Image (cartoon, rainbow, N blue to C red; front, side, top):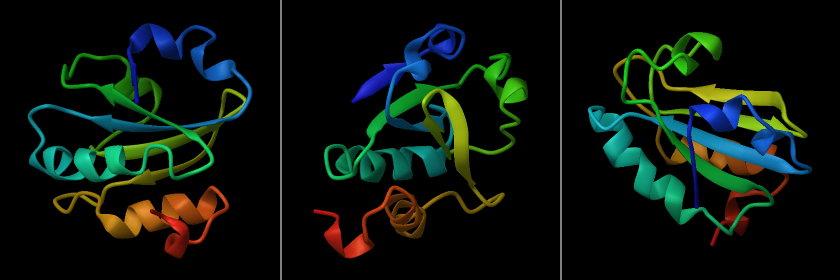
Length: 114
């Protein structure tokens, strides 16, 4: 699974062909620590590249640039452009329903997840 950094959002990394779903997370976030392993487990089971972006530093400009208010958050990029996002409800985090929604949006039914 790819690990993305600030420079990856400023360069050509996301402008490649295809789809990339990025899970923005922070080391200090309990909801993230619970969700990231489930997100990692989907790697290779959906028709997209899955990647992680650690934005633990609250001064990271991606918080403001992408309008992230709560982590974890899933952002899908197609051909380098933001196609859709799934934001965590405040105080709840993301769960298997978010992963099922992600899978559905990527064109496979939740039953096809291995």
